[in-house]
Amino acid sequence: MEFTNVNQLPRSTLRTLWTRFAFGARPGARLGAAGLNRRKFVVALYFPSMRITDVDAVWLHCPIPPEQQHVSDFGRITSFDMTLVTLATDTGLTGYGEAKAGVGSAAVCASLVTCVREELRPLLVGQDPREITRLWERMYNGPRDHYALARGRAFPILGRRGLTVAAISGVDMALWDVLGKSLGCPVVQLLGGACRQAMPAYASGGWADEAGIGQQLLGYVDKGFRAVKMRVGVMDGHVDASVARVRAARRALGPQIKLMADAHGTYSAAEARRFCDGVADCDLFWFEEPVNPDNRDAAAEVRAYATMPIAAGESEFTRFDFRDLIQHRAVDVLQPDLAICGGITEGRRIAALAEAHQLALAPHLWGSALSFAAGLHLAFASPSAIILEYSLGANPLLRELPEEQVEVRDGMIAAPVKPGLGVTPRSEFVERYAVRR
Ligand SMILES: [Mg+2]
Image (cartoon, rainbow, N blue to C red; front, side, top):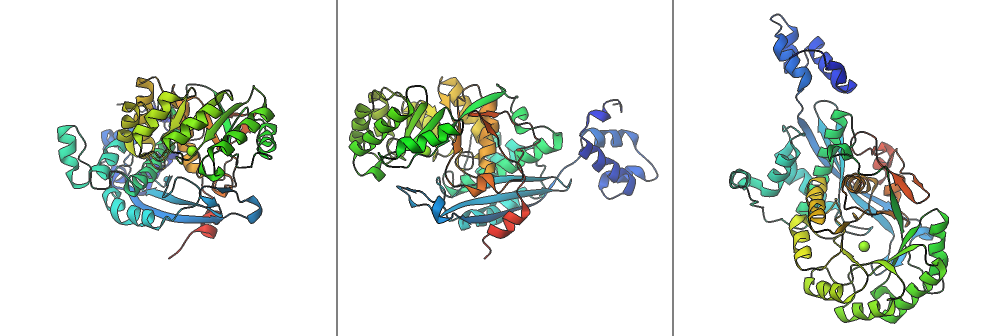
């Protein structure tokens, strides 16, 4: 092995290695003492060790000013919450991830904080953060991990759905973030590279009543978006009221703007069919979560009846839930939320399912800048991804938490280029909104 390619290593890696060599702060620095072993030093240069030194989580609770709050079937949204996962390494690199306790804006994240600290942290400290798949399986399979790896199939612990998988999601994101930073490249590159230079985004909002919905959505169009999503469902009282709102929206937007409707899983199958009839000539780009996601048969019934594509998946866990959705023929557009479904590792498996079944992928990006970034990197890397969600609700975790800002220009978002996930939480923001107990 020769020194010739040393300059290709990231500067941060070189700095760390030379420091070790010069000052003897690490095991590898013994090479600098008498008895220098040139071969071991070169190996250390090419394959520097990296270990996880700590994993922590904090619940961030951000109140939303009254004038920016909206009302949906979830009630008046008075806060946006997240679980921020931080993964520290002995190289000085830190990874960040997000775990979700709720699919919407507000949530109680105390259980997730405990899960990360008490259940997952002991499995991770001392491990190499670059062995992401191995660590994912370790968190998922628990003490039977060695059986799982030997047999080639999962032996999950009890929490193979729910908050445990959400907690794993946050850790997984942080692992990918560290790997990208250690190599000086964005996560999308680790996933095979971006399939396109830019992707269209849709403005996600649309809570206004029949009289105001057109103006509200046109406000999004004025910001450059060529696709918009509105909320429908039980919050409208009767299906016909939802139909009237969608028809008003289409009239205001004209035929060129893509329009989606999201029922948050609140219709019965009969109501969803009635809705489909009522908006049949509105050219919906998709109809999202018509029915309760646990009612797979009803979802399949609606999909078979509808003439527009059906989107779903934001509250599903793991590739197994998405496999079931697909097998039930219940969905056209898969919407994994990477802070819920199992992180980027599971997201890429779900993307592969979409690709194998000729279905579309549109990750659920309603969350903090971290789950947004994770879904963004995955979407750019997957040929099945068609469009990106961009929240137009009040969301300080998307726009005020990070040092970096995502730019939406003429309704398009450019492929990410910063190392890792490219999201640096501002420490003063974290301090201000952290829930300390
Ligand atoms: Mg939705």
